[in-house]
Length: 172
Image (cartoon, rainbow, N blue to C red; front, side, top):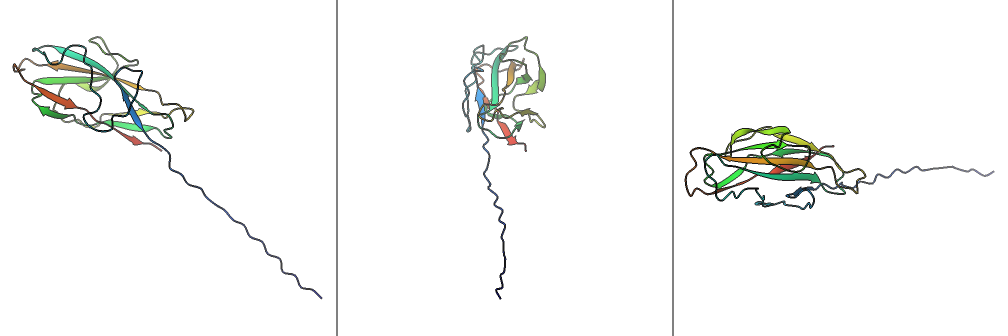
């Protein structure tokens, strides 16, 4: 008499890998690059911002997108600009137009309303970015238009800088 014992096993393996996430910016709406540290990209204002007089407004477009191979969308928060020097009597507006470009006639979604002090605190200024489809493509850009206005109290020889940070957090 022969006794036989049967046995069997089942295995399951999970493989885990992190996705990628990369925010890029562009000053011309065509060439995108990483500007991960301050001061970041230099904004090419349409009028010389080094020669402002009370009542002058200068304009500059900027765009952000998620880089190719980014695997998730993002919520982007605009933080309070970091100011150096004197930015007193300067205010700004940030508009989200539907195409790249920026002038006195640019309209769109008002992210930061006109008249916001350049050194003033921001709260709750956000927009979303989508990852590219297919994942090997960059996401669609969000276009932005900065409008900076010199107030009546601008002092001759006044000089200052402002650095805006766009902080992207992945959405799952």
